Length: 391
Image (cartoon, rainbow, N blue to C red; front, side, top):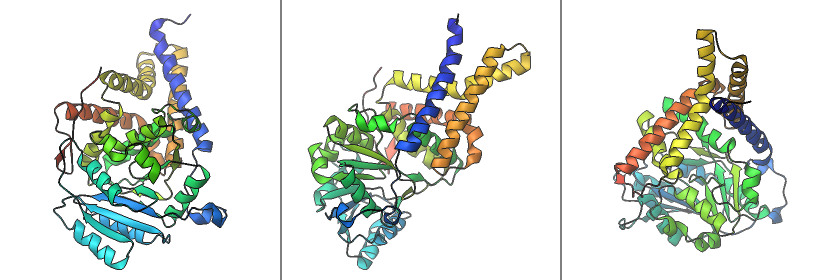
């Protein structure tokens, strides 16, 4: 009979096995968003509506040029690119205007002052949606690069999948140590924990993941859910817009965009840690209990099998059954990490370092909690609007 103190060993191996099964299922059901040349389709399968690509930009002189260059190379002509200069203090507006002089699909608008109760980026996105003329609204970040033909591919997928919101997991380019450790975990959390087939079928709003680097809305659907005005003070606007789409009975679709959507690196380790920390605790809905359970579970996945093996090796008294279970757990976790690294182009050499990635993410999660508790979380030198904690 299994003793109570033994249960956690079995829970760890079962959880690791579930992660592998979800990843193997998603290997089939998480469809890649591909360039037009990779897909056979009829011309009449692509809608001809105007697409508005909306880019909020605040002090983005180092990235906005790369973003707009990628958009200028897109051959889809029924397109407008609207960039909002959110009171930048650098050369952001100058760079946008230079690009606009070369491509008449690009235009720059100036942002209004930030009203009380709004997060800056959400206010910028709301203004962009009001200024847009498109039948479809594609929100991207100023540090996002799209491959040629992504707009046409997205229109096709929206049409054939009858999607009200199409979002895509981006390729995350990593240059610093923090990025190399955190990004595989972020992709692991989606690829190994979110069963895509079920997520597309059921109405549960929390069975979803939406990425602000790429949110392709039918304009009518965006307005129907209230747009960014409905999430004005919610730090994770992308996740919440996806949840609202599902709550409204509309069609939310997640695809693998790692071949056509790229998110540029942060400005170093500290910038990366702060950037990711902004959304971790809010993604847990500000629940202290969920944070506690989350940290216990993933730390157990990363370290309980290792500690069991280390104890057995040192004391030479480890129970053979637990040693075997621990070995299986480590192999399962390593295999799930391997699947993620292969799918999303992370370095395979990072696979054995997954326990370190887990420690970094847990530390970032608790930093995120304290940053929200003491209200020192910022975005582009602006204080983030906080929310009450929940048990």
